[in-house]
Image (cartoon, rainbow, N blue to C red):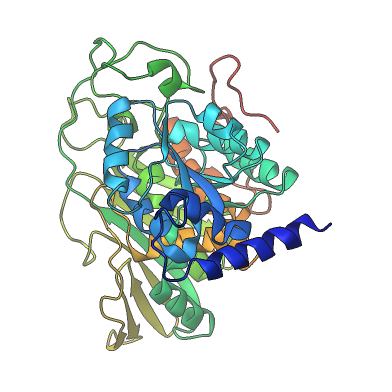
Length: 449
C-alpha cells in the first residue's frame, strides 16, 4: 500500500466533495482550522514566530496569504503582553488561534513546526537559529543574522551540516525594482561601478539612563538573557532599548540598519570581503543619556578592483543629506544610480536623469517595525525554497558576508582604529580586533556546531 498516494487521493475526494459546503458546517463535521489542515496538507508548512516585538507586523500578510499554504502553530515571546497583543493582531488575518508559548525550546521540540521566524533581540539570532536547525527546522532569521564574527561563521556551517534553508531578513533582495536595477548595473547601465555610498538618517531621541529596577511583571528575564552573560535588570531594557545598552544584546545601529544598505551595495558592486575598514564614529547627541555606543558613524571599506563602499549613519540627526531616510547611491564610469526601498533613479554621467522607476514599493523605511511588499516577497521566497520551488534570494552564506561588514564596523569603533582583512577568508589582521571575534556566553548557552 502506498500511503502517500492514498493520502493524496483522499485529499482530492474531500476537496471535491466540499464544493458548495460551508467550511465548519455540520455537513463537514470539522472546524475551519481542521479543514485547512487537510486541503493541501502534503504541501503545508507549520510555522512559528518567535519574538513578537516591532517586526511582528511584517509577518501578518505572508503567513495569512492563501498561496503561502502555512499554518501558524505558535506565537512565542518571553513577555505575556507581547503574546496577547500578537494573538489579537493575527486574529484579524487568520481564522484560527495559534498557541501561545514563552519558551523557544518548546516550540523547537514540537514536530509540527517546520520553520521558525526568529525575530528575537540580536543576541538570540544565531543561538536560536542553531537550536532550531538542530531541531529539524528551517529558519528565517531577522537581521542581523549574527551578534559577532564567530556566530557568523557558525551559522553558515550549521546550515550546511543540517541541510536547512536559512534566509536572513535583508528583504530588499526580494524587491522587484531593486532586482531590476541591479541587473541593469551588472549589464553595464552605468559602465563600471566603482563606489557605493550607503546611508541611514533618523531622529532618534534621548534614551533613559539605565537604572536597576524590579523585573517587569510577567517578563521571563532569565530567558530574555538566554545566551548573554547574566546581569540585573535595568529599566526599559527589554523593550527596544536593549539596542543601545552596551554590547550584551545589540549590535548598534550598524547591525540594526546598515545591514540592509551594505548588502545592496555589495550586490551592486559584486564584491565579497573587503581588504580593509576605517571608521570615524562617536556619540554626538544627548551625550549624557543612556545610549552607550556611537550614534554617528562613517565607515569606508576598500575592496579588490579599486572598489569602495561607504556607510554614513546618522541615528539622531535628521538632516536629509542624500534625499531620503535611507538608501544606496552607486557610482559608475558612465552614470549613477539612486536606489532605496521605494524606487530607483538612473542618472547619466552628466547627472541628467534617465529613468525614475517612481514609487513602486510600500516597504517601511526608517519607521520602527513595519513590513510591506518586499518583506512579503522575501518570506514567500523562503517558503518556496523550503518546498524546492525556488532558490533563496538571500542565502545565508552570502548574507553573512554583508553581516561581516557590520561586525568590522563595530569592531573598528570598539578598538579605536581600522585594520586590514583577508579578502578571501574574512579574517582580520589585527590582534585587538580578533579579541572581539566572539563573545562571552552564559554557561551552557554556547552555540556549537
